[in-house]
Length: 261
Image 1 (spheres, one colour):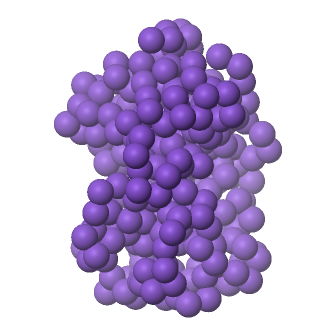
Image 2 (cartoon, one colour):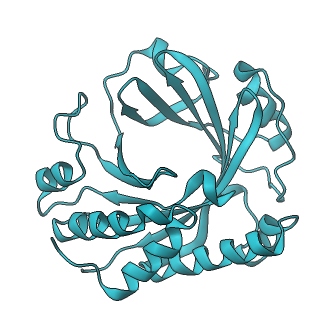
């Protein structure tokens, strides 16, 4: 097993947050993937923290991609070798890998089930009977038009985003999750095109959180930045996750590019 550098061990432990029992496995699995050639490109920091825990996403890499897939426990995936691997901690202390495919073998009916027909699918993830399809919303829109239309299949209304959303072309995306064929979640995304500068956005994002939640978010964002070089904007995307009961969590995607192990 390839040991994680000290900065990775510390940062990943911070990112695991309330999923403390999963932290050690999170660190060692990430080290193993990197040792086999996987490269970090994204860190997700979610609120409330117990809903998210540690979430990092790797490119499968070119050095030993089959080894990377095996170490992630994704060998024999029905869609073949994934393009990206998301490493996730769970509240029960386990660590799991999520396979993302750029061109999965999905039929049109499945891709658009619960989605507007105008969207452009860009990737999908499958784990057992769970399938989540991700799509970009073409053209220019506003949050006020996009959010209610995207959530209509769940039968719930969007809450205010809590940040300033600027209408821009390619500013929105959506993912739709089905469990055993039943629609269970929809996530709304605002891309960097529709977001204010990082400093302003960071202040808006934590407004309304309690002091403890603000401090935890701040520590996790700092931890994310220590894992790799941040290219361009730090906040590359925001996400709001909904079930039929309404908003259950929101997250920021931080673009941190991994260097050599």
